[in-house]
Amino acid sequence: MRIGFAPWGETLEELADAARRAEAAGAEAIWVPELHRSATVTAAAVATATRRARIGTGIALAFTRSPMITALEALDLDELSGGRFVLGLGTGVRRLNEDWHNVPFGKPVGHLRETVRNLRRFWESCTTGEPIDLPGEEEPMRIRGYQRPFAVPRSRIPVHIAAMGPAMTRLAGTIGDGWISHELCSPRYLTERVLPELETGIARAEGKKRADVEVVVSACCSVSMDRATALRRASGLVGFYASVRTYADFFAFHGLAEEQQAVVEAFRGGTGAEHLAGTVSTRMIDALTFAGGPDEVAERIAAYEGLADSIKLSPPTHGLGAAETRAAQDELLSLLPDLTGSAS
Image 1: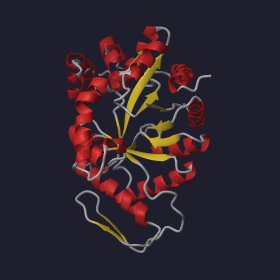
Image 2: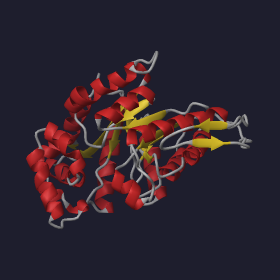
Image 3: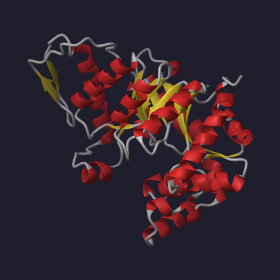
Image 4: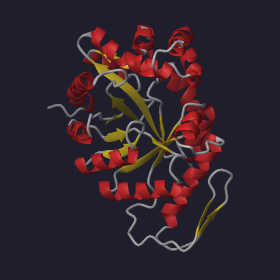
């Protein structure tokens, strides 16, 4: 199982340095998110700071850029990284798209299907001058009189799809080169809920096999010899996501419905999403994150062997100050060589 890393930095320079350190420690891929920074700009910073690791957006929002802009940015990032780029896309939720970005959310599964279709068609034909005329309910694309005068390193850049629900997971299997989990996951959830839907989606694509779809598990990884510190650092992330009712089925699956409801009530009572750590139970943290000493964390990662192809580790950030996030990342980076097998 490959080990990837999602670096943090208070500045882009610090983030790029963390990516360099992760690559030196054996990380096979470096993943960058999109919320407080632009995923594509961050990916560019990481691409120039590294030499071997794949560079992936984990994830870029699929609908807030036009498919053509996304396609162009992906081509530029693939060139900048020397063919190491992976485009990870996710839909986000309706409120984020429509209220924050003023873009239509539509029917997200169909919307994402058309978006990925447009990306691939553009990559295939952008240098030929061939007209593009793709009908669509959400993302029609009509391009005439356009020819990219620059070489395209790869006309098929890998597209990984972030999915939680069954319909989107099936879509990832059918059209994706990979599937990326939510930052909270578990081996049981992957086994019972995700992989069967992914296999169903794969079966819908002619000639496609499970080996053609990279399964990437995302995991908040809080490492400390002091278990209480490790749990406290990870609690903010769990509280942040538990405050969202969209994830009710996910928490209920893990027998955590009552614990989630307590978080939701605190949020409704005025506690900010970044300050919900105190409402999170130890049971929630243990079930959904990797929090503990080095041996305990390594054991939890090993539980995904044979289920996931790759695991994306990230330090805890929610509800923590920069100094503590930095300390948590340093502890995780210190453990990385043992996890990747690159320790001397």
